[in-house]
Amino acid sequence: MMKRCANPFTMRGHLRRCWLFTWRTPKADACALLPAPLEPVTRGGFAFWNVVVCEMRAMRPAPLPAAIGLGYWHVAYRLHARVRLESGEIVEGLYFVRSDCDRSLVTVAGNLLTDFRFHTARVAVHADGAAIEGRINASGGDAHFRLGDAKPALTTGSPFTSVAEAAEFLKYKPCAIAPSTDGLINVVRVTRREADWRYRIVTVVESDWDFLSGREIAPEVCYSIEPIDYQWERAEVRRVAP
Image (cartoon, rainbow, N blue to C red; front, side):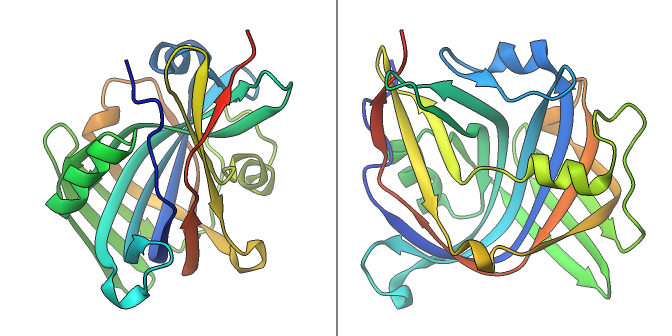
């Protein structure tokens, strides 16, 4: 049984560098990974993965000063999901299937205090002009990607009619959701200045993700996010609809 209230502290940090990779996958495949009562957010019969690769700075409990915060790389494999609460409200967010990070302290604390399923990894990201190359080394989670400045385009079979439509639909809701004890769910909302949340769509030249190997997936869009301050609120424990 999962913890009744994970994410017990409000946390603050700064996203220095961040990329969001999205893929479509059959709805049934996502349903097999989502615990009840979560269900996938879908479009045209597809569910969607959202994988973040980000460099965090000054991560610390609020209201401690940024100077004592930690810096680390975080890689997280999430599914777009939603749940209906007893109040009738539908909450959309991301369900964390796996996380990797390059600070063992964050791995230990994260597994004690969150539902994000941390593993320790080595993460390296290098920029060469407009090209970005990244490598992640983790047990069961090795990955490599290259990003370029070619004009982005949708892949054959996408349920969207344009890159802009895909980018708008797949812009994730700033919230993490995970079941708690029976009939309850943890909702971790993210506070950010929406006017500061800026991105551009970039082209994935090459990518290989061991954790997604063997799954039926196809790429949609990849976001490059501008630096921004984030605050992860203390979890709300909400009752789900029967």
